[in-house]
Image 1: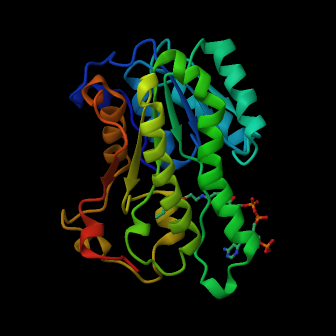
Image 2: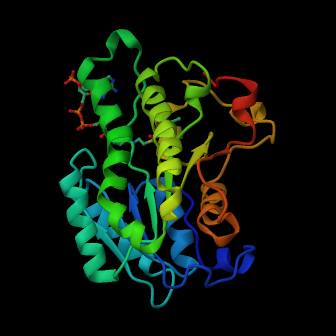
Length: 271
Ligand code: HXC
């Protein structure tokens, strides 16, 4: 699953190949399909990175593969990290600073999701998703804040579009992602004077991702035709927007949500 990037990305993209040289990115959920490709783009364009995940082998394997994308790159995978536990992220921050010296970019991407109607959604199930998506995003920033202050860094929360309208079977995720947007907006105002920027990226229907695999309505085969741009998104679409939001070209952009969905949400709920 997932369309990974390689050196051809650097040759074809609009950015200087070393635009992120000397920068260090810290990514929760970095072994998942979308956050992995975000990490690949940053590393290909010069950054070093630490990716965090709950599954140790998956996280370490992904880090080793991403590191191979650019000679000289350093990419560390730290497993057994649950974003619901702030101390587990704080320990990863310590490793990052010891090994790579700093943190410039944070992607709060760890997420949990499944389809469930309200009647079958237990209180604990709702709490699990809100704790991973919303509390986990808060914990990630909490643990990285001192390093971000030093580097005048930038945060990117991974949000969604499903809370712009009512999406059935997604009340837990919609509530969590609405909270993520609110968290980002508040932090943009609080952190502005410290020089830290914070934005959200809201992917739409992105092909070959865990999200699409889990969430596509049964029997849905023509979602691409409903997208005004007449295609599903790609993981590279998300990577490109990520590169922009961390680049100096976005230095006056904070407190925004960048929707990357071909205008799908404008035509209504996919479900
Ligand atoms: C109903 C479910 C369920 C399901 C779990 N639960 N799966 N309820 N339908 N399909 C319930 C359990 O019964 C339990 O409630 C509670 O949720 C917690 O489940 P656990 O398995 O104990 O929790 P945990 O191990 O922490 O797992 C968290 C998880 C799981 C969110 C439930 O799915 C997970 O780990 N997901 C991580 C990977 C993932 O989801 N990736 C998706 C990324 S894609 P009870 O009451 O029985 O105790 C994505 C795209 C978003 O996020 C895009 C939005 C458009």
